[in-house]
Image (cartoon, rainbow, N blue to C red; front, side):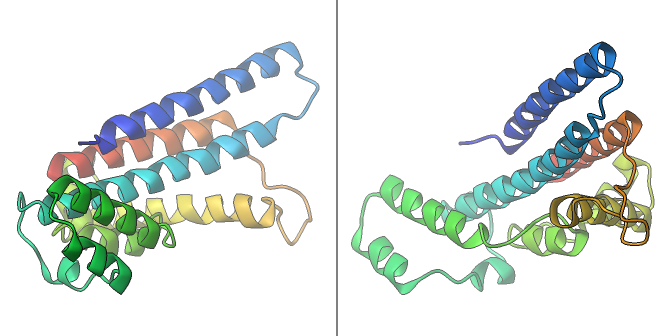
Length: 200
């Protein structure tokens, strides 16, 4: 079985490598604006979180399919293609059936983004994890409203970077970004993932 947390931390390590490149150029060539590296880090941090949620949900759904966990109404309503249903029914080998379902879940969920708080909640409901923000608020030492707000702001900035080149429409200049911003986002997302992982 895959370990979503281990993969998430591995993805964070690769982003830390990029951060090291930023630090090197910041020291060696201070006259050059290398803030785009920080913007790339920002997008990749949110991407790592998104991938973690995808991974966690897929693994959780497969465990329900395997009979290791109980089903729930959201899982029961998950739509797969009739072609996949026929393949599952016509195959007796459980490992092959599991792989077929794994592929189908990946294909369907790849169309969804699991970054914004509402989307994360809907995704986790597929594996019976309800009231996620309330459940992790004690571990994060934050009110659930503050968790939702913080994640929402992070995702909003990520979207500004990814879809609008991080340009302020009033000034036509890029919104400033610094190392502290990246560190804050990294720390929050790592704590968030660890808190979710602890409760699942």
